[in-house]
Length: 56
Image (cartoon, rainbow, N blue to C red):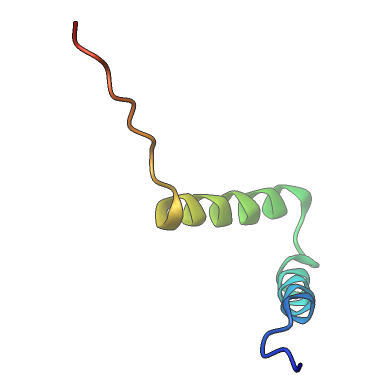
C-alpha cells in the first residue's frame, strides 16, 4: 500500500523552511519569530472553552 502523504517528509520540509528563516536571527529575534507564530496559531485555531455555570 503506497502512502499518499508522508508526515515525516512534511516535518523535515517545515523544519528546513523554519531554519532557513531563523538561522541568521539573534536570540531575541528568534524569540519574536516563534511568539508571532504562536499568536497566529492561537488566533486561527484556538477556541476558548466556555464553562457553563449552573444557576441554582
